[in-house]
Structure formats: structure tokens, C-alpha cells
Image (cartoon, rainbow, N blue to C red):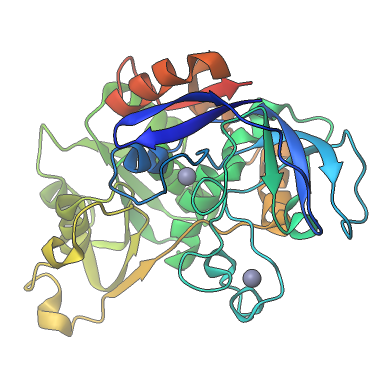
Length: 350
Ligand SMILES: [Zn+2]
Ligand SMILES: [Zn+2]
């Protein structure tokens, strides 16, 4: 089969690999659609460590090709979506509702991280009984593609912040994750949602996903604008959707006392440099909360996310701006990494 492999830092590309075999509790799916994540770009650049020679990618849609021993209640050929996070469902972390940290430190994220990933013709799914999510017949692969990671992640940023009906929310960064957080804030009942970005296509999409106001940080100071929009109080919740020192600091600065900073970005730099602004952090005693979240996974999460799509509570397909075949994956990485041509998310079709 064809598989996209991390060859070395800044070098990815297709290689011929054997089709994986399903062991006990595992399944192999034939991938019909996948995509590239911002995290894959961090991996390619060597900012997040993944071993060279591994197949990358963690967002598969496909049909069941093989079921390992002990995976009951599924049939070959069924259409399934699998989240980037594939928890076991029975360890102490899973049973404590921290599915993403299954087995310990970032342990729920296996595909394209610690085992071969989904940018390939076939992918092996661990803990298949907990992770194969049937796709409702009325939904296309494209309709649900982004439930496999970014929508689950973005929405979880709103959930972890415990957004209450009527809260004011600012989302820094309107890339795929930030846009999903914006949609999450709307679903959670925020009264005012402020998106922050500078790219025209993302600012427009921000409004489509639920932002009431979109601030261009290149034209004005977003912290000042947010303070003005909230009567000098600051927002109840600020969500960081990129993974930069500046946006994290701006989240602290624009959150009201007693408010919550919800961090979704993957930080490529040491967090000692992240810069928590002391005065706006109230010298440590302003009752501000900082929460961080990795994408919740598992098939029950996926069922809920796909139901939101099915019942028109969110339109994720509109974030897919470009379409590529698996053979064109290097070109797709180049476009996605450069953020050129108004790209938000790309389809990769094996
Ligand atoms: Zn991802
Ligand atoms: Zn577990």
C-alpha cells in the first residue's frame, strides 16, 4: 500500500508498505478520506518528536477491511470514522474520563504518534471496539471528516472552559482549531463570541462558524478591542487556538478576573518562555483559571459529534477548502504548511 512517511526533519513522502494485519482487539480500515493536521506540520518540522520512518496522520474515515479477534458487533465493509485519540476504555485514565491521556502522558494519541498513522491506503486501529464509530447513512465522508480531530478538539476547548449560557468568549487564532472552538462557544451558549485573526478567508469563516465580531490583530490591538467590547471587564473565557507565547499572553490579558484561559495550541517552544503577564494574572491571585485539553476521542464522543453534524448544529464541510489525492500529499503539505491560497483544511483521498 501507499503510505506517507516522516523520513527526516522537513521531509515527508510516500513509500510502499505492507497492508497492516489486525491483531486481537484491533481492526484494519481501508481509508477513503483523511486530512492533514496542524500537528502533522509540527511533526514534519521536528517540533514534536515522532520516530523517523513512521507513517503519519491521525484523522481517518474508511470502511472496515479486517477485524481482529474479540472485536464483536461490527461487519466488514461498514463505514466508520475514527478519532485521532483511540482510548482503551478500561484503564484508570479512561475510567476517570481523561480518555485522551489513556494509559498516561498523551497516551490516547497513538495513530501517527506512537504507531503508524492514517495517511495511507490502510490503517490499523487499536482498541477497535472502543473506537470504530459508524457513520450515519445520510452523512458523506466529507461531512464528518473533521469530527476525527479538529472539531472534537476545538469544541473541547469550550467544554473544558465550562462556558456558561451568556458568557463572553474570545478565540485567539481562527485556523481550523480556533474555528472549531468558535463553533463550540456558540454551541455552549455564549452571548458574545470574538474571533481574532488576520487572514481574510479565516475572518470570514469565523463569522460563518459563529463569531459576532472578528478582530484583525494586524490592524488593532486585540486586547484593547476586547476590553472595549466588554465594558473594560474582559471576557469570561479566552481560548488559545494556535500555540504561541503572544496569543497565550493575550488570553491572560483579555480574561476578566475569575475567568478562564482555555489552551488548545501545541506549543513548540519551552513553556518557560510562554510569558504569563504578571499584572493581568493578578500577581497570581486573580482567581483566573488555566485549563488545557487534548482532543477527546472514542466512539461515543464521535457519535455525539456526528449527531451534531446530522442535525445541522454545525457545518464542518465548509472548512475544507482544497482537495488532493494521496499521490499529491507532498503538494498538500506544502500548501497547508504555508497557509497559502486561503487554505483552511484539505481532503486527502487515497
Ligand atoms: Zn490533529
Ligand atoms: Zn485507557
